[in-house]
Length: 205
Image (cartoon, rainbow, N blue to C red; front, side, top):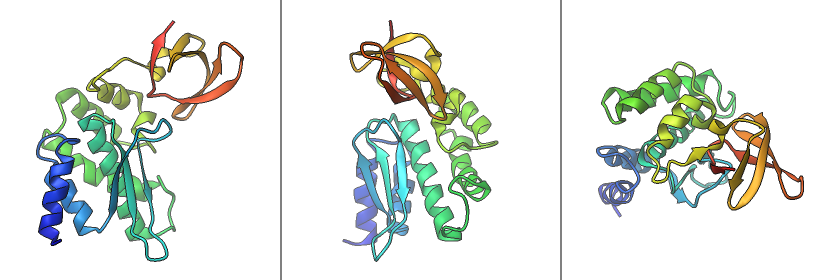
């Protein structure tokens, strides 16, 4: 398969996951950088990840399949920024240090400037880019703006607050403590504790 054919193939796959106009560019990144790009089944612990290649294996990026187009784009750029940082600095810098933040901001800002995002997400992106976090979930303003475009916006755990009972996957919990992007939650029926993502859709009780 030629590079042109590979780009066309990825463009067709990605247009179902990304905002209009974005698929050809992301397809170009995948092919030009020879990335093993995978659209993954949903994961509660992460939206996407980057894994450096080793022993002849290619660099790998995975993105959750259930993300809305704007979250999919933001997460994809986040992981490609990790790839860019790895190619430039190797393992000599912190994963979410100033080097990565600079690359991520440079890569994501043009999408906001060219009105790829709707106005509410665009404003949140510009605010977020002043100091990008390890995950967009770490920024309540951006996470909340993104969630409004989910098929089922629901109620995010991060918006529910602590000590309030909720149901998640038909089980009752109470959030006891926030730990970065996840919450330490007590299962109501037996008192056992679990970590649940702040972006989890929950039903207040």
